[in-house]
Image (cartoon, rainbow, N blue to C red; front, side, top):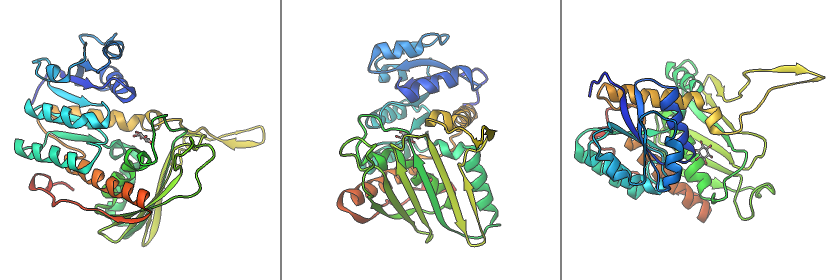
Length: 342
Ligand code: ISE
């Protein structure tokens, strides 16, 4: 597509992430404009489109994707709505940035992967934004130098201030740990083969009946272990940390010590309160990379395969949570279209 003029993007879903991406495309990144905002709730679409030059508001995604004004699609609707949006985008051969999860389960992710293969080329970048976070990028680059030796373990902590009212125990895996699943695969270059979920006594700060926190152990085909503490009602802040333990050293990210103060007999700093704040730079870089690649006629970043693999691992994780113990991951063979990727 090598184009000079800004890319016309339709943003599907005007919730928290959709609205944040509209602001980002309109005010932060270059080379693109928001052509349309779509939401089943027409008033919400109008509210998000308001104030964005030349942007129209709609309730029907298929109609918008058929419009000549739309060059690419950013899908930020709820997970269950992704499959239909992706298949419609494929019907118009439109490039897509699809927020995670690609789809909520492995079977629907497989269908999407098959439809993309039928096009014969990649069309989707999946929104695993941690791959664009400067700290994660530095950790990956350091591991790739081999200076620390082979990674043996990855310790991850993922804490949210409070879970939204609709959050279920399995969503701690499929909505939250999904990020560590992708980060583990990406950082180590391994596939995840089995998942164990341990459940400590639930926090009294968590809503009644929610299994929060959970402790998840991911086994990989490279023999490494990646553990994840997921705690979505920790109350104090948004924290995402990772420490790689390698044969000759360790490397850790996510301490968030950007500004340390000393005052009145104390020292300290502040903690981000949500992911739009903690990962603001990563989201900016992710969307800019997508726009740049699209304008070059390329598709880069996390692929449909990565979205499918995460869905398959999370599905095993939910089984491990519900049945107790360890569940193995059933992964289809990697199609040729995705084999050239790292
Ligand atoms: C949410 O959907 C996200 O993607 C956030 O990054 C994660 O921290 C949170 O736990 C999820 O619910």
